[in-house]
Image 1 (cartoon, one colour):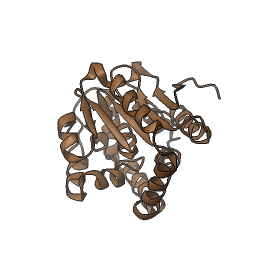
Image 2 (cartoon, one colour):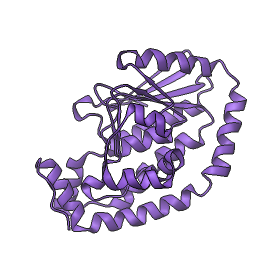
Image 3 (cartoon, helix red, strand yellow):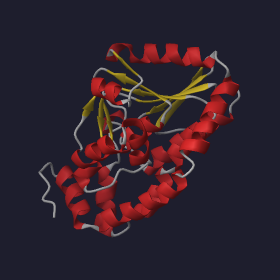
Length: 260
């Protein structure tokens, strides 16, 4: 497959998948979701790939959903939030059901859906300038892409609810303390440290990794399909609220929202 919005490279058994839209801080679009899904699927099917690394080009890992497309959908009445949720839900499922270790390499912002993606990976290396932000509340939405499910598993239910209701940024050091990040490294050394770790995993027992991930899915994530059905239902309700429209337009107009 020819990729336009991501970069895909295999080095010494490590597939490096890079969201490549730095001008928008790698904001998620339908095209990026599709290309990420295809890349993860391709890496899973490739016997020459033993480990995956997911990262973002430029200053940020991923700034979350591209709000301009939401505004367009709100203005012309074409926004289908349930369909959007069904589309994005393929990514956490692809990551968690892969038999290969998946490492998130996060620099700068991992916000909204970007935070969800990082949480779904098996390991998260955070640059010392990383920020993990459950930004959905700023536009009146529930975390999507399996975000609340994965966050609760990482930090516990109470802290997950607090992060999702406040949208307060979590620093790299706090992310390490909370269990979101596996390692915190200097920003300039992120790629080097991640690749060194990925190569170490690539030299390890792939049959063991596959068994661990399958066991985690069967015992810890087996009800994820039920969760995603609820996420789609509740997100559609949030999107139908005037608060969503106000949040999107306020953000794009660079003004404080006036929520109901």
